[in-house]
Length: 254
Image 1 (cartoon, one colour):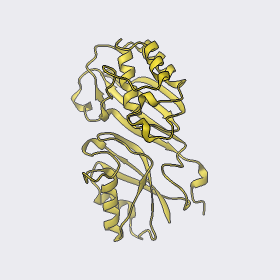
Image 2: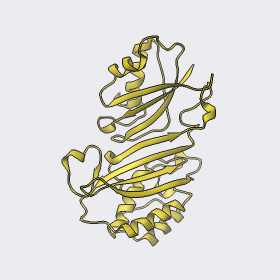
Image 3: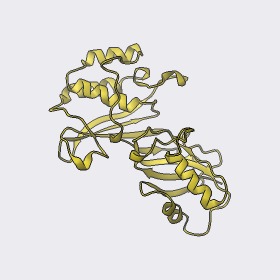
Image 4: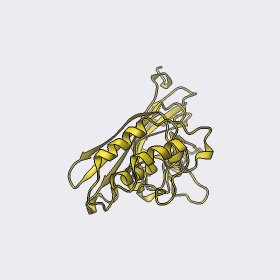
């Protein structure tokens, strides 16, 4: 039977979500190894998307096929086997054709950043040593992103995709808490490799006056990658995959 695993993780200590040949320190492998050990059968999971090294998820879904769920407290047992920074919250029965990645309709990322050095935030929010930001210009940048369809210019490896079109449903920046801490929230039907981290870096370039909004808009329309000095990504530790939405039709109603 197919199940969706609803889970969360702090990505600080890991090389990203996806299993890799040159490291065993990925979220996917850690969960697969724990499930395989507990179920006494090799178990593979398929995630809703890949997150880079150091990136977190407060809501993540993966699917797997399990013939028989054990009678004991399955969630408690698997969480006991997993490290403290990875947790499975629910096993949700879904239809046999349901796919965690391809059936997702909307994805939401949140990016936290702060401008005053604050030690207790350094693992969960990205620190940028800027004295101030021009949020009027940043908001213009947000409007440009909202009206853009093709994000090839903000993609790390655009040639791996058939197309680089994305529909941005929502994008906003708001101040939260104190200590000059901010949150960027973006909801889209899909995201490309590196897209959010390139996006926040360019918005910060705009906010510090290094990049004009007219040049930002021109570069997005050109579909060419940003070059030096506008080529860097934002720091990974501020990025969270925070919400995945699916159609009701994929869930097992029996």
